[in-house]
Length: 78
Image (cartoon, rainbow, N blue to C red; front, side, top):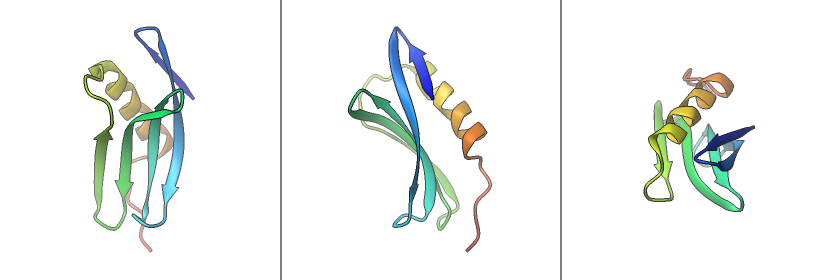
């Protein structure tokens, strides 16, 4: 899936992480990851990490919408 903000086309990738026990959505600008929303099923927390300063709020809002649609906020039990 792609998200465009300020004429920049970002790509989103759904990724599972068995070490952290959860599922996340990553936001990529070409070959650079710029943000991630991760549902940590062990900790029962949803965490946002940004890897670039000065990200527009609009891109994070759109990423949250995609997270809710594609992954959801329901934690998985083992």
